[in-house]
Amino acid sequence: MVLWHITSYHDGLALEYQRLHAVARLQRTYGRWLWRWRAPLEDRLALRLLPVTGDTPGTLTGTSGPSPSPRDEQLIQAASAILADAHNRGQTISQAALGRLLRADGYTVGNDRLRWLTTQAQDRTSAIEPPERRAA
Image (cartoon, rainbow, N blue to C red; front, side, top):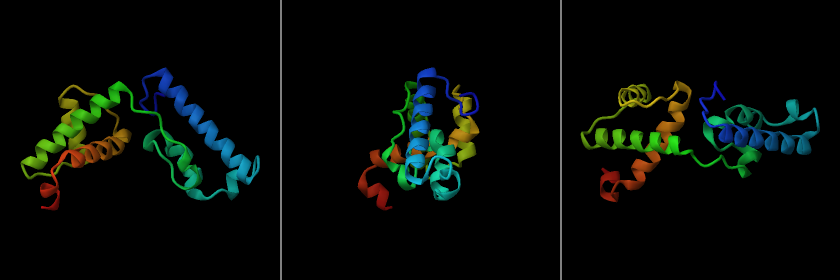
């Protein structure tokens, strides 16, 4: 939980349950021990990336990540506001710059979660944008 910057015990348990479910699915498909060598690389890597991405490639796509916690929702909203403001000014913000701006606003976010946060915020920003602005 500390390494993945998960502060809620409930979220940590949900992610561990999801990981164990994915391992059980791989064991059922490829064998109890052989899944470690025979499963496709993307499925094995998905077990490590599961808490970061929330979704997994390959055969594990049926598992969906837990819904974002209220803290994550606040982070996504703050990042979306920063990205939308920069877009309105005609600027682009790098992932590192977004992290610095969020930290300046008093939010704490780990560098390993910035990619996930940037993707989520960009998705929300593009959904809010009018179609004529997206075409430009």
